[in-house]
Length: 254
Image (cartoon, rainbow, N blue to C red; front, side, top):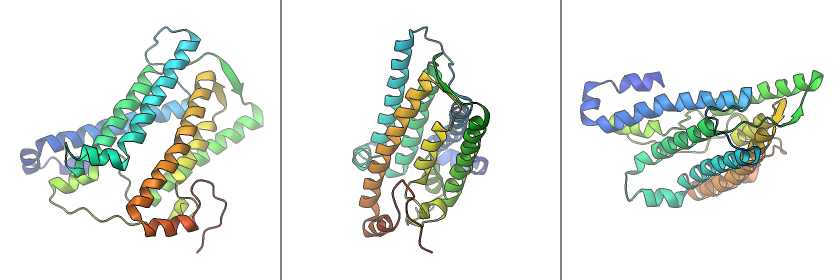
């Protein structure tokens, strides 16, 4: 990330692509900050930044509403039909950056206005507490494994912009199944679902969060799988015939 920002300090790039360079900086600064905030939300439990002074019921409704806003943004903006519509207003190279920026904005809304509940649903102690913490750490390591297996992970859509301002051609995408992608087609979703549930203290707002976000990730898996079938055709159909979508019930072939 730092290396990308250093490259944009070239005076010629700033002169010829000022707006794109500014967008890259916004994404590269806000993205990690919001990711850390969300990581703390998952690791340390939900928190309230701005207390709206609502009743317990209304606070949960606000939490659910914020989650739905994030789901809609995340599920609509990434769809092929929306990308085709967006192409009327901006070049294709900005699509992923638009998705990344709107994801950051909606996630900020979730984190800033989330209302923590004082109602305790469940709490793990003793050996169960240790087992849940161990599972949590294992899922964090598995997430890192999944990201590294991708080789080139660009959640913010910065790389197409860097190739554009550097006058480099986009590389054609191919399906290469490595690491956990040999076991399931969407391992990051699987690890995230397990991760959010592997927390020893379950407040009512965290329960709402876990249920809603788990359902959304499962639905998102099906939607993303459909898009990948359209994008890669027979190549992805062959991959999907050999590798399960979300549950690793089959031993991968060597």
